[in-house]
Length: 310
Image (cartoon, rainbow, N blue to C red; front, side, top):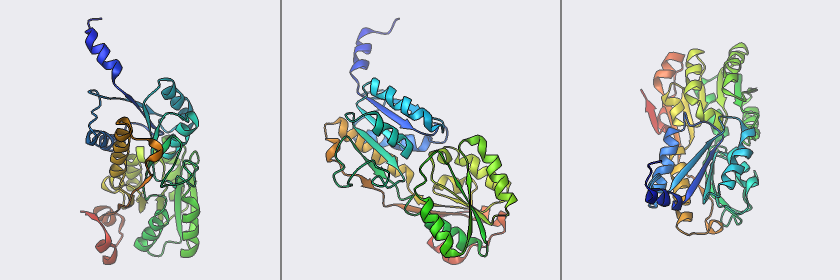
């Protein structure tokens, strides 16, 4: 009532983008901003000449198929499926609507595409160097904390965890007793950290998961509270109080996802857009956290860091 008819007509002609993610909006503000930046680079501004419909599963993977199906029913122009579980759900929901995924997985290994150069079908996307460098996170943590013989590895059992095999192999090579802990939801975090303390683990590697990205501020607060040397893939974790981070540049990945969505809206064919592989890896050390933990960081590691937080 009272909304001018021309505005309604104009609204109905805007293409709609479906944005699907396994986590929650809280904690993903910077990634969403990067995605919208990529869209703007291609001339699309949310609310002006395009509309973005967000679907957040709040860490509940079983909600993703319904959300993906809802976007298909809405006949969105493109689905931006960010995080691996969202990408897999979108792929099962449609073979016609273009899908642009973003995630730290090997898209061939998880079955999203057959080839990187010409993915074919209705799906392409952007991958980050997170799974590929997971073993390096363990190695860096081991190098930093020295003689620890037990290290905990936190995973979300609701996700594929493709990095697990690499981390387990790295642990064997280092002579480390790796203890795997599960957290399916945010409510599981406290119990998981209590287990880390109980087993007297010398450190903690946090696995790749949309749930953990969404709640990395809380994870950082827990490692500070329990005085646990920990490493995660995102810089924001180290900035929030974690000991260090090592992984792909998430903001750049989301920006490139937005660029690809924009290019598809402008008429490019999804099956002719190669999967982009991120090449930026960031290593961040929090010196304040190290001091609080009583960890002496080798100068060799400080010299290799892209950023040192003091």
